[in-house]
Image 1 (cartoon, rainbow, N blue to C red):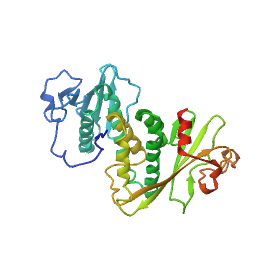
Image 2: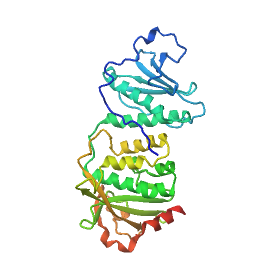
Image 3: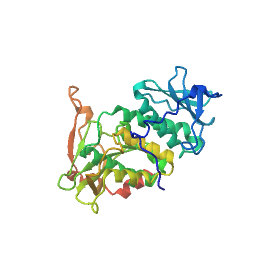
Image 4: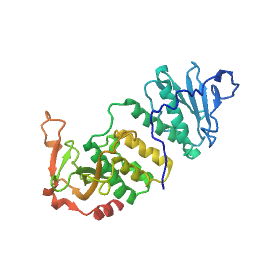
Length: 336
């Protein structure tokens, strides 16, 4: 199933468009003085209104179903306020910083477009996911992923498709992918976790371990190491861009709402589809799986001097053959 969900992006198409013009002259029973979003932008006739809030700032009002769960908190970011009136089942997104007016309009148009693809009983959750994605976008700390970060993301996407999707439905597979949320391991299945690493093949068999706790395991936990060989390719017949790998993984999802969840994970690792990754092609080689036990080569956190912190080290997996298992054996264990 192919899902089309627009990426947050900044364009010049909103310069002349002002949906709030003349809004005070409209008689309305809405929460604030408002007008409905027209059918051209809102062909599914969702409960959407352009509005001016109590301070006269531009706003977008988004109604949602009375049966929708309201457990997710509203994202917050500078220059735009987000609020909710749960008694009216209404989300209010309002401009706070007038210098961000054009960016605010783009946020509104993006959310309106996304809601056309989402079932009515998922509107609130979809809005929150999209606002969280925009929040990452506005932080704008850096532009694009490094080569090493690209390889790491490709390795995680490979594990997502080969492992998580094969043993779980796409919704549960997304929930298991917790690495982008800065969890200790990349995938979690109850008491079992998977740590994903990328390397560059037999010539460089070492993986980088980014903390003293990353390969530590308790007696009641199971941890697997999933190592994906990711090499730079020289032609399109041999490899694909990072964007290609992202699209292939997204096509495996079952609903537009899951695509929004997936895109949020990508934002959390710094991926933005508007960045250009077309100049670098990557190919996937051998995938190796290891059962990480107390005896697996690693730095034991409890034995470190308290004065030592932020430990990073390498493990040569060619010396770990006794812990290696087949991917099928790992999958069988995860299915139990």
